[in-house]
Length: 282
Image (cartoon, rainbow, N blue to C red; front, side, top):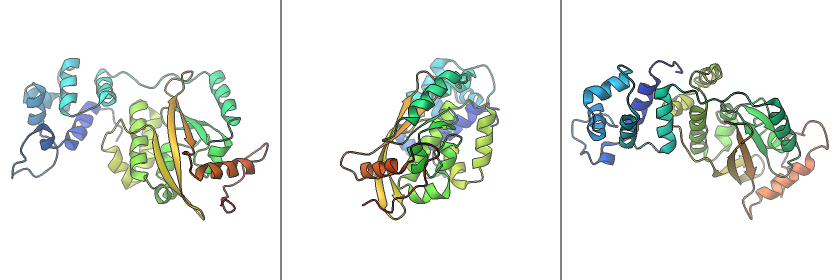
């Protein structure tokens, strides 16, 4: 699934399948058996020949110009981020930066360790978590600890059962993985191979999404307590290009703030955080 051969064609076919004829004002004829746009329809609306578009999808011929690619992107209704992704695929430019300086990584990890009121963690372009504060470790049942992977955690049975907006949140996380990770990365191949045992991942990965809501309000079921609301916000880490800081906070007026305060108070002053326990939160 991560073979580099004709990544452009796979991306265009996936996105073409998600645009309906009606979106371009094309009547749906009685003989149309599948959804999505036909190649000839993309070519016509992009102002290029059907044969030229076919060659682009097949990965044959010379590299198409940026003008042609932007015309195709417009027909496929790609947003700015998705268009940049298409241009990067065609140019072959890697999107994964060099590893961050260890000094920067250590400094950020120390800062997160002192951040005690809200769960927070930092992930690399593969969504591997490289630093996490104790509250995130406890709140995530260990799945948000340094050394874990954010996307793999989302496909666990626990998250499928407890995250109310699982489909929306997971599509967004998978989109950032595809957007930020170099398609030639051995780590990406490893992750896709591992996750491909899950039918939900295969379905979501096949969409070739590269954008989704970065920030969101979600609800998660906590055993013995019920559903709590959590604000998730993501920030770029300027000292670590390509890395992302995720902060989980309590929305105003929500009991979530009390939950976080309880968990923070239960953390030992030093050493490993204690297991998650919400039995005495009221």
